[in-house]
Amino acid sequence: MMALKFLAIFSCLIFVCSSQDPTQTPKRLHPALFFSNKPALPDYPGVAIDTGSVTLACVGGSQDNRRVHFKWYKDGALLKADSSPIIATIAGDLTINPSDYTRDDGFYRCLITDNTWSLLSNMAELQLAYTSGIKKNDVTMSGIQYQGWKYIYTGYKHSKYPKPTFIWKFNGRTLQESKRISISEDGNLYIAQLSLNDAGKYSFEMQLGSLRQQRESINLQVASMFFYYSIE
Image (cartoon, rainbow, N blue to C red):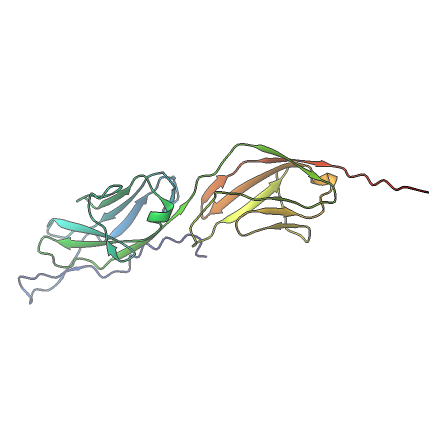
């Protein structure tokens, strides 16, 4: 499953190709290039919340300990070092602070070269996706028996890929979709023909890989509808 598989591609053949002696046998790098990501949210590489901070680390070296240089690319375009809010260091770190969903979502690549600009590695790749912050204040809403009811989130955004999973719970139990209850791909909840039994506490959770975020809880109150008939 590709739910936020941030593609840290390590399948690169990593060699030092000396420009001074073309007959020299290429030396294998040690250690091999690898990606390490330190996101604003702990425990889930490649995810950051808007206005947070995220750091990508690209690490590599050569057997003879020559100094290496790091170049960062985003969606194929070279990133300028020390261009706030994106700062690239000579140690290979790329820090984005503050992060912005509309600007920073995409694919990041790191290119490592030595001081003779001989290619040490082809690009390693990592996908970085953002998800906006989530409110946590409880709200109280009301509905009327036999009428439809919906709860639509506004101002919430996430990466087009991958999409998160939304889980609704009713009084602590996972809410299952049915002919009467549906949940949209954006997490909105729709209930047709409310019954008095629908009154209670609704809680919401967004899941993106191992990332879990809870939204506000909704306390739904359902008023009964009485029908009056006139008999002549």
